[in-house]
Image (cartoon, rainbow, N blue to C red; front, side, top):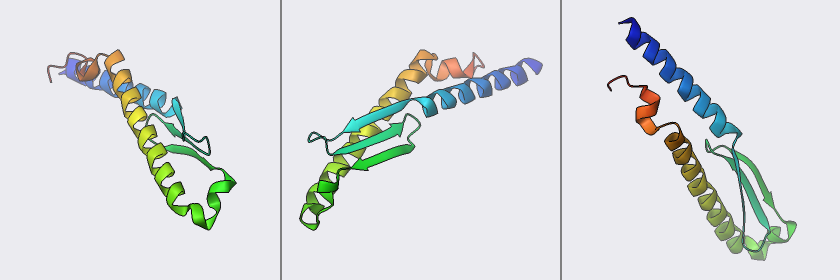
Length: 102
Protein backbone atom coordinates (compact mmCIF):
# COMPACT_ATOMS: atom_id res chain seq x y z
CA UNK A 1 0.00 0.00 0.00
CA UNK A 2 2.80 2.41 0.91
CA UNK A 3 4.49 1.74 -2.44
CA UNK A 4 1.31 2.83 -4.26
CA UNK A 5 1.17 6.08 -2.26
CA UNK A 6 4.84 6.68 -3.04
CA UNK A 7 4.17 5.98 -6.74
CA UNK A 8 1.25 8.44 -6.71
CA UNK A 9 3.48 11.06 -5.09
CA UNK A 10 6.14 10.53 -7.76
CA UNK A 11 3.49 10.71 -10.50
CA UNK A 12 2.22 14.01 -9.14
CA UNK A 13 5.77 15.34 -8.88
CA UNK A 14 6.49 14.44 -12.51
CA UNK A 15 3.21 15.96 -13.69
CA UNK A 16 3.94 19.23 -11.86
CA UNK A 17 7.45 19.28 -13.35
CA UNK A 18 6.06 18.71 -16.85
CA UNK A 19 3.45 21.45 -16.41
CA UNK A 20 6.12 23.90 -15.22
CA UNK A 21 8.36 23.09 -18.17
CA UNK A 22 5.46 23.49 -20.63
CA UNK A 23 4.48 26.84 -19.12
CA UNK A 24 8.05 28.11 -19.58
CA UNK A 25 8.37 26.94 -23.19
CA UNK A 26 7.31 29.76 -25.51
CA UNK A 27 6.42 29.24 -29.16
CA UNK A 28 6.52 32.26 -31.46
CA UNK A 29 4.61 32.28 -34.75
CA UNK A 30 4.60 35.13 -37.26
CA UNK A 31 2.30 35.56 -40.25
CA UNK A 32 3.91 35.16 -43.70
CA UNK A 33 3.78 38.92 -44.22
CA UNK A 34 5.39 39.51 -40.81
CA UNK A 35 2.59 41.79 -39.63
CA UNK A 36 1.07 39.51 -36.97
CA UNK A 37 3.05 37.79 -34.22
CA UNK A 38 1.70 35.43 -31.59
CA UNK A 39 3.53 33.94 -28.62
CA UNK A 40 1.97 30.95 -26.86
CA UNK A 41 3.31 28.72 -24.12
CA UNK A 42 3.45 24.98 -24.65
CA UNK A 43 0.66 24.66 -22.08
CA UNK A 44 -1.44 26.69 -24.52
CA UNK A 45 -1.62 30.03 -22.76
CA UNK A 46 -1.48 33.00 -25.13
CA UNK A 47 1.32 35.28 -23.98
CA UNK A 48 1.34 37.92 -26.72
CA UNK A 49 -0.58 39.00 -29.79
CA UNK A 50 1.09 41.76 -31.79
CA UNK A 51 -0.72 43.21 -34.82
CA UNK A 52 0.93 45.80 -37.05
CA UNK A 53 -1.07 49.02 -37.20
CA UNK A 54 -1.46 48.71 -40.97
CA UNK A 55 -3.86 45.79 -40.36
CA UNK A 56 -6.15 47.96 -38.25
CA UNK A 57 -7.67 49.82 -41.21
CA UNK A 58 -11.35 48.93 -41.77
CA UNK A 59 -10.69 47.65 -45.30
CA UNK A 60 -8.18 45.07 -43.93
CA UNK A 61 -10.64 43.46 -41.48
CA UNK A 62 -11.11 40.25 -43.50
CA UNK A 63 -7.39 39.84 -44.12
CA UNK A 64 -6.62 40.45 -40.44
CA UNK A 65 -9.15 37.85 -39.31
CA UNK A 66 -7.80 35.25 -41.75
CA UNK A 67 -4.15 35.85 -40.86
CA UNK A 68 -4.88 35.88 -37.12
CA UNK A 69 -6.80 32.60 -37.39
CA UNK A 70 -3.95 31.00 -39.34
CA UNK A 71 -1.24 32.22 -36.95
CA UNK A 72 -3.19 31.08 -33.86
CA UNK A 73 -3.91 27.68 -35.43
CA UNK A 74 -0.24 27.21 -36.25
CA UNK A 75 0.79 28.24 -32.73
CA UNK A 76 -1.67 25.77 -31.16
CA UNK A 77 -0.49 22.95 -33.43
CA UNK A 78 3.12 23.65 -32.52
CA UNK A 79 2.27 23.76 -28.81
CA UNK A 80 0.61 20.33 -29.11
CA UNK A 81 3.74 18.97 -30.78
CA UNK A 82 6.02 20.40 -28.10
CA UNK A 83 3.85 18.96 -25.32
CA UNK A 84 3.77 15.55 -27.00
CA UNK A 85 7.56 15.57 -27.40
CA UNK A 86 8.04 16.53 -23.74
CA UNK A 87 5.76 13.63 -22.74
CA UNK A 88 7.81 11.25 -24.91
CA UNK A 89 11.01 12.49 -23.26
CA UNK A 90 9.49 11.52 -19.91
CA UNK A 91 8.64 8.06 -21.24
CA UNK A 92 5.05 8.87 -22.24
CA UNK A 93 2.17 8.00 -19.95
CA UNK A 94 3.97 4.85 -18.81
CA UNK A 95 6.86 7.05 -17.64
CA UNK A 96 4.49 9.31 -15.73
CA UNK A 97 2.81 6.32 -14.11
CA UNK A 98 6.20 5.25 -12.80
CA UNK A 99 5.47 1.56 -13.17
CA UNK A 100 2.30 1.72 -11.08
CA UNK A 101 0.70 -1.05 -13.08
CA UNK A 102 -1.97 1.32 -14.40
